Length: 399
Image 1 (cartoon, rainbow, N blue to C red):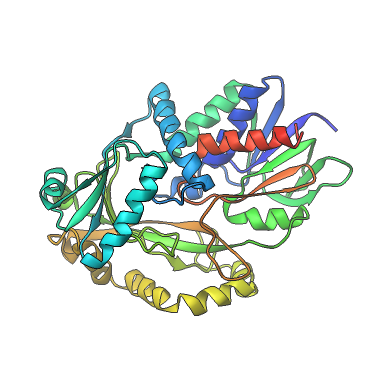
Image 2: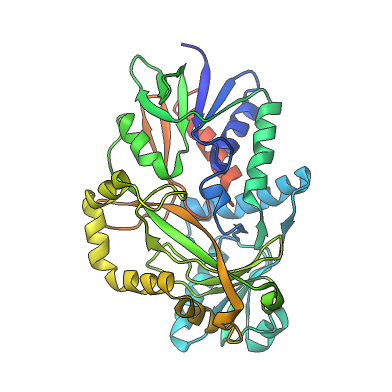
């Protein structure tokens, strides 16, 4: 057995973890294994591209602790690597009186989480920031921004290679053996690699690899497909930055929002529809469907949230219905102003009791550390999460 650390997954979090491990111990051998032929292919390359400010998360949670720090570090990383990261700002807009209490709670959380420069604004100030917005109150987060996270992943991969790390693309892990005090992985092609320690940052496949390594089944990954519309270029001037609704605090989704990205494309969405596959290139995977339907938490979730599910189905099937949500705070947007945009799969951890897990979740079996749940703001916080992972490895003497 050699003194190798294996990192499974070359999304933004796996690459940030490999980079952090090499920075701490440059003599250590770090190998990143990725099933795809390129880095950042799955959630990293199909998310909203937002550098979140840390507003939404329960004080004291891992998300709250790591997002604000991670956002600051992400801006610094992008500046050093010549990647455009635009601090465009975000408005979270209340359009009805019954949303004000939830806006108050978001402001309380943001204050507790030390979100920089956050302030409450009224209708006139809202229109100064976003001339086409209508609402009764909003929170403005100037530090929230946008970036191309796939470009960040490529820069992280370059850092890993420059520090002596190895990337093995096209390595699809088929078997995990954690016996004899180490870790042995085998690819679908039969190639084996052994190490002292491994970190699994496997996103949509994290539960399967954890189970293969001897961890419990709870939580299970359930895939949700998020699809976006885009504003036609001649109407993109309706949105200058990021415009979000006040979210439902009981769900780990932020609702239909409007986002201007670093390429100046403006997206509307996303939907959040239970998906029949974990792979964005496929429409259906019988194995993934079976995994979702065989999990007791799935049925409990569906019984609890069936009305929300019907709404999401309407959003997915009807452009007009999705646009109507955005019209609540930007009433000038019309269905003819949009066209179909990109989509992606969100790996959502679902507990056996049917609860949608909102915080980051880590687990350990033998000499393997598993990232069981790293949804938004996982990309924003990736550098800070990587340090958290490295700390946990150090504390458990998994080095």
